Image 1 (spheres, rainbow, N blue to C red):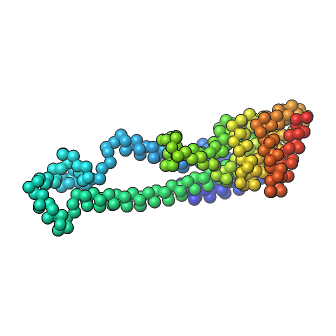
Image 2 (cartoon, rainbow, N blue to C red; image 1 turned 45 degrees about the horizontal axis):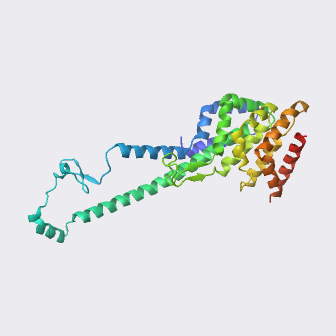
Image 3 (cartoon, helix red, strand yellow; image 1 turned 180 degrees about the vertical axis):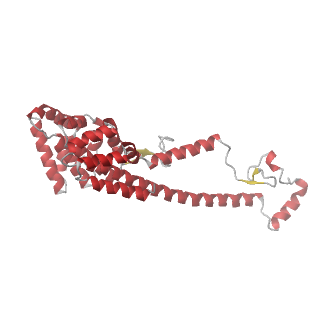
Length: 327
């Protein structure tokens, strides 16, 4: 499917299901198919690029050595720069007696061997440079398209579990995609990528390692999915508080440049420490204790001085609820 058409389609469905009746939401999820939805969210262009690069390297290593060659009159490939004995049959070997003739040939314009080497090398470099520029442009566009579709796929889930029927739709989401798979997807989207200078993740783990943080749009979408999950039933909150890696990754985004992300982090605490009724008191206290143990309270106190009023108000509510839950 054309990337722009796929992007527009998911964008339209995302808006269609916002505040829609739960049956329409179920129908949209069913028509998309859980497998396809997981595919567009989990599709990682960088992984494909890395795999392709690794495959090319293996082929170069295991196959014939790269050489600058040209076919001779018999159609055989001849290495002009490093010709073997068997590949020289299309050329006449100049011996010592013909050295003067060789110099004469060089002087009247026919390229000498060093000149030929230099010319072929320059042509190869030019061709590789043009190809490299095309590859970089294609790769960047593919990466942008992939991230845009990922965001819309995540926002589809965000709108799916938002609204008056959110609790039922959370159960529907878990049934269709798998409870463990949902948390695995959310966790993977918050992990920073480890790449080396050549974008080959697993080729050289100790050479020019770069840690690339996830895109802000992706982080925002994931945060609000977690906000909605935490707004579900007490058992949904218990499932969420058990996702240690996910919560630790979310903790690193309290200092995110986007105030929307910082506000969403505070919202997560508010919803996780919400108590539906007195029967949920002990579980709510356990959730508050777990958040405190992980360091969420300390991060919230840092955000009390946040420049954004919305963030400060959310933080005030979150801290108050934690204090009430711990009593």
